[in-house]
Amino acid sequence: MAGQFYPGTTKELDRAVRLYTRDAEEKIRAKGIVVPHAGYVYSGGVAGEVFSTVTIPDRSVIFCPNHTGVGSDAAIMSREAWRMPWGEVPIDGELADRLLAASPLLSEDASAHRGEHSLEVQLPFLRRFREAFRFVPVALGHLSLSDCRALGEAVARIAGEETRPPLLIASSDMSHYEPDGIARKKDGAAIDRMLSLDPEGLFRVVRSERISMCGVIPATVVLFASLALGATSARLVKYSTSGDVSGDRGQVVGYAGLAFL
Image (tube, rainbow, N blue to C red; front, top):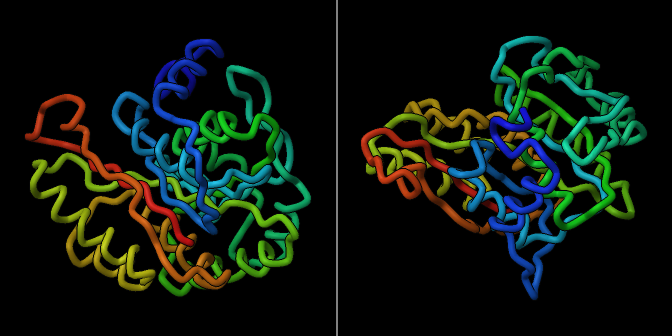
């Protein structure tokens, strides 16, 4: 997706990422985060502020929605690498293998990741603060609430065994193509559930209020995992809509950045 959601050359990409990030004097240690995945011009400010705010370890597990509908509903990759403008980013095969063994929901499936942008847009932000890093990609489709809990708790068991726990990242945009005022109201309901560390409430309010939050499954999984790892608080780092950039308030997409501590 280089050249579409983010610049296609290393130089231009580095410039863009630095535009949307800062060198914060103090960092917070988050167990999990929620970050948006639209084109950088729209969501880069929110994503960049989250990555600027939290400590970035040398390993991450990135959970993204499966926009294409191809492949399994909990698709992990444990081998190879992700090709980016600056080179290849290695997948942490050892960590991926342990996750596969811990959760019967996960299956090795590269097809779900082909053509999926919502994971790879996070990689340049990780590189901004950790030049050498590994990650595990997980694309999630239609999971039930009980599936989200089981997967999140399995991830937490593995992450909790690590001396240097990986950062758990949920890639998600919020409301899609709603008037700005309605988007903010709907998104506020979902954000309130995340700030309350309430994954069940998040899962249910997104459905009951018809909030078009594309990464509600990744966010629910990461919230369950963060709770199992001992999270006791959550922080809304930044929220905006595409209307803040375009000036068009008629149909916007919402972007929220949160950290679970």
